[in-house]
Each structure stands twice: as C-alpha cells, then as structure tokens.
Amino acid sequence: MALCLLTGCLLVVGLRPRLVSGLALPLPSVPSSAAPAPPTPSTPSVPSVPTSSLARPGDCASLVGGLDVRGQVAQLVVVGVSGDNPAATVSLVRENQVGGIFVGGNATALLKDRSLDAVQAAARLPVAVSVDEEGGRVQRIDDLDGEIPSARAMAATKSPAQVRALATERGHQLRGRGVTVDFAPDTDVTDAPDDDVIGDRSFSPDPARVKTYAMAFAAGLRDAGVQPVLKHFPGHGHGSGDSHKGTVVTPPLDRLRAVDLVPYRGIADYGPVAVMVGHLDVPDLTGGVPATLSPAAYGLLRGEFGFTGPVLTDDLGAMKAITAQYSLPEAVLKALQAGADQALWSSGGRVDEVLNRLVRAVQAGELPQARVQESVTRVLRGKGLCG
Image (tube, rainbow, N blue to C red; front, side, top):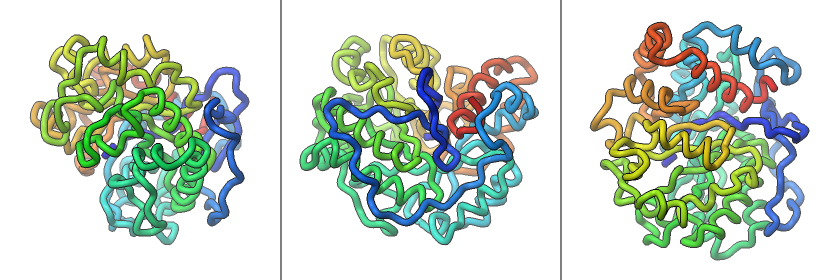
C-alpha cells in the first residue's frame, strides 16, 4: 500500500507553471537517461474537475487566511473512503471539507460514471483524490483498464522512455476517472523476493537504476496531470519487517545514505513530486519512534535532502507500527507536530474526532498556528490554487 497526499506539488522556483486540470505543474524535467517524452497515447478525454473560484494561482496567504482553524486542519488530512459507496464519500467531503481522500481496495464504483464529479462539487476547495497505483500487485484500476507490470518487471523489460509512456497512459486513465494523486513510484531499493513486503514493488537493488526508472514513471504521471508521490522515505527496502504487522527497523543511517537514500539525492531531478514517509525506525535517527512521527526524519528530508514539496505520512490507521502505540487522533497530531503536511489513514471514519483534536491542539498551542499554515500553503499550492 501507500499517501497521502498527497495532494500535489510545490511549485519549483524559477520554472514557469502550466495549469493541468487544476494542478499547477512546472514544465517537467526529463531524466538524462530517458528519451524525449513520446506522443500522448490515445486515451479518453480528461473530464474537467472543479477547482475553485480562482481563475489563476494567486496569493496563498489570503487563501489560507480565509479558512478558520477547522478549515485549515481539515486540509491536512487524507481520509480513506470506500470505493463502493459514492454517496458516503460525497457526504464526508460536504460535512468535513477534508483536503484529500484515498480510494483503496478493489471496489470501483467511485471510479466509474463520473462519480468523483459529485465529490468535487461538494467541496469548497478541490479534494485531492489519491490511489496507490504502482503496477503489479498494487493496482486499483486493473479491473477497469487492465493490468500494468510491477516496478521490477518494468525495469527488467522496458527502457525509461517506455516506462514514461506507460505511466503517461496510466495517468490519463486515472485522471479520466477523477484521480489526481498516485502514491507511486516506489523508490525503495531491494533485491528481496517478489512477494516480500517491498519485493517486486522496487525497480531494482541498484539505487541509481531505481532513481532512473522512478523519474521516468513520475514524469509520465505528471504528463497526464497526476501528482506522483515517492515512497517510503527514508527507505523500506532493507527494513526488518512489515509495518502493517509491527515495528520495522532499518539499517543505521550511514548504511541508508550509501544505498536506500540514494534515490532521494538530487530530489529536484524528479520535477514536482510529493514524498511519503514510512513507519520506519532508523536506530540512530528516530530512536525507537516511527519516522512518520519523528521530527528528525522530516528534518533529514527537508535539510540534508533539501526537499521543499509536500510530505505525507504512510497509513496511520491500519498499520500496527502505529496503532499498537497511539490512538488515531494522537497519531495524526504527532505526525503534524513532527513535520508532516498531511496525515493519511486508509481505514476512514473518525474524522470529527480527529479534527476536533487538532482544533484543540491549535487553540492550546500544542500545534503551532504557523506550522499549520505552512503545511496548508503547501497543500493548496499542490492543488494549483495559489502561487
């Protein structure tokens, strides 16, 4: 599985933006190892998605300031929804005005018949609609649009240019169904067996090859107007287990820097992306705390790796690495306090409970208002609503 986030991309300084169905995307950079982008495949036209009353990106401060505290913290959550109940998703968005939703599982009603148009129409600000469409054993629209290979199979059988073309086609299929964010590509590095927790979700055990192919896949999604999300920072490929089942401990930080973190070096090479942080305990970095809740982990990504775009958590509601220690509202709060821009829980529900806890935290000074506004700004920029 994955978030978040995510929601979208932060505009890169110095690049002239183009608007793509509500996403503000700089002109994408092409990996040096990849051929120029192929012609856009013949796919169904992308339906327009309501964005907002803004005709063009404007001042983020005024847009953020126009939201009350609850409206601001609502932009910082990505809530799992059932793919078989469009009406319930419309109600969720209308009542809570959340920043994002995540469509997991195999049900597809929400992804058919323009059902997501009604969800967007219920939102005062556009909702980021996310899935985790990696290929292989992690797919969401295979029953609707056919299967695509796993990351490992892509890298073994296709050139970077071909992977970019494949991701572009898949991105058009996603976008045509109303999806705006894909929790992919997986930038983990491993040679573990295909059915391992990461396994064939990784492009390669060679970190340089991982970056080359991840850049191509990300560029293809972006060509289609879908926001890519790199995962799982700081690297799940050599972790001790599965965060769905319990704590995952990675090798020490110096070993991560030599292998698992290599795909994040020069992260601007990917163009506009978001990053998902995993529930990974790095012994000499996070000190027994999952990276999703560790200020040191976000500090590493923002500092050493210079990432300025949106960052979201892995699933806070269905993974025992988190649920065994924290209630959902406390986990969400701790993630935002640590530096996440958006917190994801795929299990859905409990939205009022979470938002009420966040509002109280802001009012009490547990979650600084400046911290909230910084993240809301990244989220809204990712949706193309302000510059």
